[in-house]
Image (cartoon, rainbow, N blue to C red):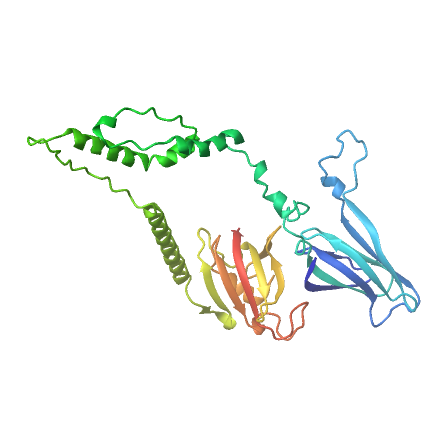
Length: 373
């Protein structure tokens, strides 16, 4: 579990606060404010959340009792002069609605962190087979073969080498010798087919040369055409050449896309944009509701906020729902488009200190437009 950014909220008596975290949120502490309206009274923090049982597919349809849509619990109780702060350890899932309410007269501060619960988990099946030794993992006895030959027959293959004899070149010794029985496996025979035809053609050519004689009784030499074998590595060279060509083409395409993306453009208020990928279809204009994915970074590359999964971040463009840098930088994007937006502090949060963002910070956003309504 990794902390992504700091989160906090101020709860005021008599006023409900409803939040929808953009990521998983861990609440760590609750504390009374600096000034107390009730110097001895108790203040209770209540949390209302959606009942998971309502969305459970396994709920018995015949069950007469319908579960409540919302459930309420007590997060903590604080008493001035006795217990003015309390540690909490509760995680609220992202994209769900939660409501806080105070019972009492004192203001309460809650704080915690946005977290990534999957950051430290090992890859799936990473430990499978860890009890198996290296020798067991590569035991060739367990590997099956297309054709299995008993060990006794394999031994006979070596002994058969003695039964092969060279044919004599004398004319009187041209008696046909029976060919020994072949005990090689089919794929071994296939491997030898490139060499044996050359040997046979050579012997038959010698016999033919002995049978053909000229008028003076002397043998007439026969010219034999030897087949030129194709180099073994020729096909491999062709494959390597094809792969090189593919890599070159990919590099060209990538360079063309980067060139098409263009350089930075400076807009109103010093906001700079650079289109990484041009989208298509509808264009984002003021008044439209746009759904976005984004990653927000400081200039030191530290991420202070992001929305990369689950429910996308949706807002009304030009309506003041977001910082000015977003209203200016997102305008003109198309569905599927990706853009880098650099927001100066004056178009961001200015001198105000926000959770995870120091005052007067320049912000860098990598955004993608998913939907425009």
